[in-house]
Image (cartoon, rainbow, N blue to C red; front, side, top):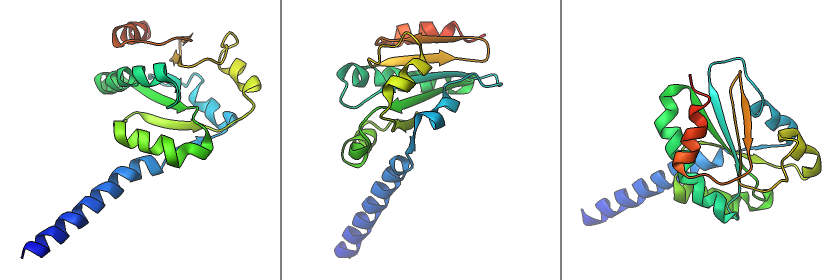
Length: 164
């Protein structure tokens, strides 16, 4: 009986691991042309918070919990948080997916795989140097770009300027 119980525990834990991995297996890897639809005004009543980040960027990692908190606190208020990872595509399986699993991120995560940064950076914002973290907040009426880190209060204060 003891062996049956151990086998059940092992099977259950494998199932849980697969379930957790399923959330990170479905990452969308996009080139910039594909990403653009996430960056422009949509004809709806949502406000979008798009954060450009990477696992190798310490200030980015430090502020991720604030975006997650914002996502949780404003999910029912027509706010959508999108995290655009600039991690190296060859490290998605070895670095990004384990990071997402460890930190249990709930926000939508997209991976930008476009090496022509000199072309797409100014399309996101003409004044963006390319440094991260960087955040774009927009709705159908307004669009602002921030090339800096946030704490939760600062992020929420910026968001509140977009919410009616």
